[in-house]
Length: 260
Image (cartoon, rainbow, N blue to C red; front, side, top):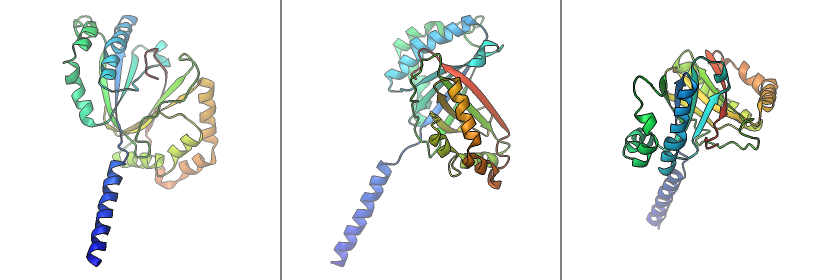
């Protein structure tokens, strides 16, 4: 009987382990592509490529919830920007995508003007790809729950750089174990993602995006955040001092063809 009970206990532990792994929430990966362009001609060609070729091809491959955003500051900037945020289930999915696109005849046809652009008339100035992995406490992208018009919605992209890897770990801990992420949830910042940057030009850093019905709501949310006792306590904690060396705040609007 003791042998039978032991066998049953071992079997239960194995089943629990299998169940736990099967239900483990896997952290997504994100690719943020940054297009730099100078004029309306380049902007039109980028928009046509993204809306008619790139997004449809990704949708066909099961990649949904692709965000395309333009900074409000584009109006006065010399070098203007388009951000394209793509979620991936695995790193392999991100790695394999370029090769798969080049075998997609519909994509090649729809994107021909962009793909075959002459070097004397480039479609863009430069492209940067930033690869990220979602935070453990925010493993999946959350689509914003907003009801206002496209022209009013605000998508706020934030980039926090740190002076060293150790300080970067401290800032990520501040978000997760420290409770900063929970405070964002409590105050309904409609966060789309929080992520650790794996590869990019400004490491070590983390990035995240929140969303709002309009600029007035955005400003009110941040005032409430900075005035909250939770934030005042958190920012004063000794273990989180000096963990951000540079904070970049980018206010954007979604394009008409963005998935959200």
